[in-house]
Length: 222
Image (cartoon, rainbow, N blue to C red; front, side, top):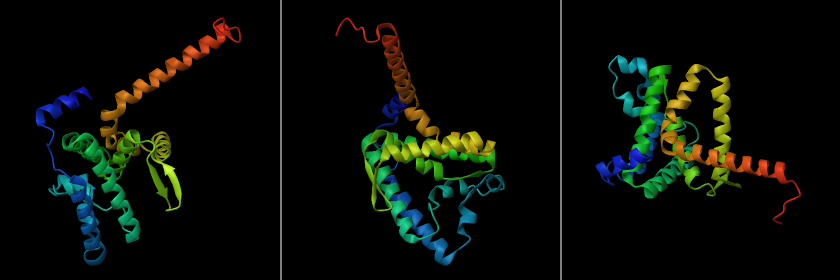
């Protein structure tokens, strides 16, 4: 992330829109109300269809970002929007406006690149990438699953990574492109740290195996 920190110093700590997620989630709620009660076909005009973009519907490059996470039960929507706001706001408080804006923009550009390849883009992986970053930074934060079962963020993140793995292995090329490009922000921010941790854990495990192989129960230093 060295180049990101250099970019932050150049842009300043307040680059971007402070409290971005309150605007995003509020607009999502407004879009839901408009689409559910007044304009049922709204999603057809806001979704990221690359063919439509090439035909001149440039607004889709932005409007897909404010599509609600669900069009079903409004209670589930409100819960999803609150969780999205809380996670995004926490990341902004942790990183500052500039780094959070860069993370968000990288995810948005990744979703657009996926649309270029697959023909259609979604904001699902973008907002899920916010949760993955949150879980990486706060692995022991607790969520109430179904309002009853407390579960730590790290276990939810692991579950999602397992789903991604199977979708990547057994899915189509379009699925693979959507996963890789839409999560590019997470890989850029945390990839080097994850690889470093994996390498350190592997080396530690290797040294332990070599130690047991060479000494076994005959440790002269005990």
